[in-house]
Image (cartoon, rainbow, N blue to C red):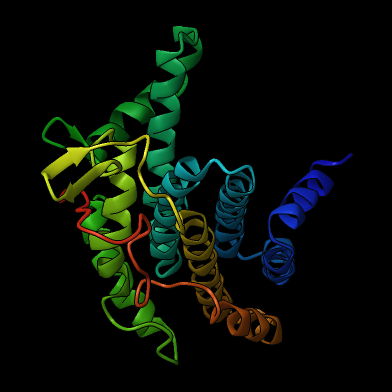
Length: 277
């Protein structure tokens, strides 16, 4: 049995309707990834799209396997990849910083894993020249040289300016940061949001009996919406001939949860998330 067949069978067993919806989005993503081009900017975005898609299908697989906390926390990876790639999409001059930062990471990881120093000497001068570009004092910087919170603000404005129709309100991504992102980041950081409750006797911490009702739907719908939002921007930016397919996906996406109408994934009651990330 092929991995694709296993994946489809897994999703079908979990939710046949969602598998049908997923098929439309899958076809659209594949069309974008496979589109023939000599545009270096689009080629890079296509490669980034592949990573986003792989991460998204990972969320779906975890949900179908009922590993709900893992699925929900994995949505953070989908979100950060979408956010970073949208920033790369909106200005092709950013490609240099993106690739230079990748060179720095590649050098350091190879060195840390014990790669022969003589082999690394070939690119060491380039690494030494690039490294200071991605430092603030002694603190390493992301390739975009911003915090994730600042990146969300920048991407939000750029995306709304780039699209001819306003498909999400200004403040969508900063809103995601304050709610969904802080929620899943608390899990990634080992913080105490998941399990902290307030009841008749005051505050108490109980992970074993924590109400996870609805968290599977949250993981599916938030990640589905993020991928749709991303593909919409890519198709618009490069004027790719997939408007009809996108319209079909957007019609389906109206059924899926977004930040504007989501309830707390962990159920009712006072369940504060992490204030910082």
